[in-house]
Length: 327
Ligand code: SIN
Image 1 (cartoon, rainbow, N blue to C red):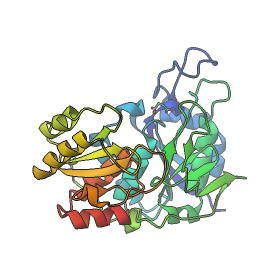
Image 2 (image 1 turned 90 degrees about the vertical axis):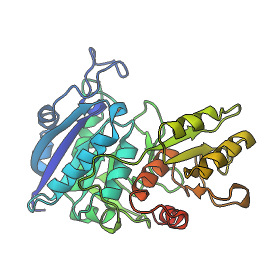
Image 3 (image 1 turned 45 degrees about the horizontal axis):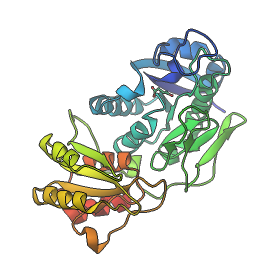
Image 4 (image 1 turned 180 degrees about the vertical axis):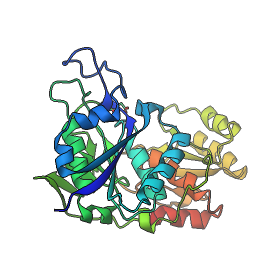
């Protein structure tokens, strides 16, 4: 295969984490290792592709912000638009990787592969998973067919779609799963193998863009539980939220007192989005929650991202609901 040109954008995370001892798998500093050293630690990268690296930020991904997302999406778009770049790999902390990946899958328009990867064990660990994840991400980015799938997460030998993937284990390397839908494919013998494709819109077919944007509309999330306090909804309204995603009970339900509060917010023009704290299934419209928007199968954190982008395009409830069917 012709050697391709892969651009690595490093954002920190455990893949760049450093601990005092090789057996310390939790008490490390994320984002401590520079992109040059990540690349130098995997000599096989340069056998696979021409590699260029850039340190975009060096953070624990818990510190990812919407402002950084906007800058990252704009940067990825700029790099993707350079003629001789064939693929992009983004190294990123795993804690918010699924959110960043979903945001990029909605806002970057490119026909080259954009692959996110990271690690569950720091670079200093015995059996660190970062080097192989990085190599497999580069192998995927260098494989032309990968571009058909838009932004992907490559972790632990699997390829996952941002729309469906979730971090499912706090510490194990086999953490990224797309629960009911399954992964899109695997990486083996130096190349990706694909088996299915999402039908939702992403990347080239997405209508969203964040070109020139400095901030996103404010959308909050509240979590449903027994004894849930409606004060959090008031607090979100006071903080200027344009919409609130309720990670509801079961099929996006909420205690009666919370529903009453939610209706008061809707009367003030704040959208209420019904998602679920349940780990699978769809949230659909029911007469009881008339006036709300349904998150479909999106997790609350991804429903929030989609709603932020939708609010840049429409305020119409029917159109908003249609977007939740399409994306
Ligand atoms: C982070 O998300 O930056 C820390 C955890 C990880 O990368 O696994």
